[in-house]
Image: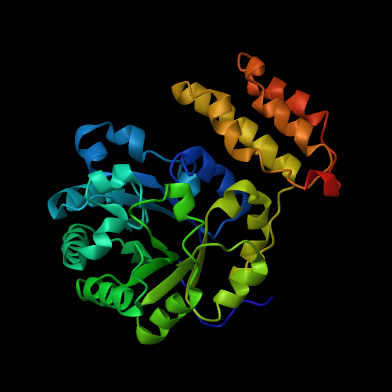
Length: 336
């Protein structure tokens, strides 16, 4: 596929922020697979940055760029301070979480419940935009609870856009604040892609990216006819090899150059580096690459080696050698 003549949006393809998953080790793996896809951190609360270890929450590897910091919070002053820290640490974008429905987030009065307070979101966005020179974006749902009116999300976007936000990443499901777990909130409320497509038609000057339920390159290509960008979450995490075709197909760039074996080799080198730098154990990193050989013969036994708690005392290079015994780079339906 040849590269389009017009410059491509930085939000054309991205991997979603996912709590407990998209940490710096996960992002390092994803960057080995795609050079152009935008990567997001886990949500970091303003409280964690105001009262906790900034280094623990914000450090990342230079290889991860482009990488965006997602913040959780609602107080403009705290958001501005947190955004300034993110810029100082070198992030390429600050994203405000207005989509997470968990009880813990609701108790902090941020996440999806902020969609009911668009003026509060607008104030936070303005404070962050005044504090930093990098883009400030918002990730949100199409609605909350069982309110299914398009007017609700349209008015939310309109109000926040007036504060200067130009990029909206829209999960095409409602967030039910009561009665569903976070996992159920990703599966039970129906997907309504047409509302996100309509937002792009109604706000052609804004960048609108779509998130939710997308699992294939074909679906990505279809939505890119309607919106500016597509964000994948769990599909990208569980089947990371999917990312290897994105640079060529969706960015018109060179095809992915590394084999699975070479990616695994690079991850082992990274494990050794991480342990030397700060004592990070290899298994905290290896957990993110367990889907690397999905669909190949021997993948199950390969995963079992990297997941075996009895091997934790061994250096990662020895574990790698044990896992490699089971590697067969041929597809097998039984492993899919």
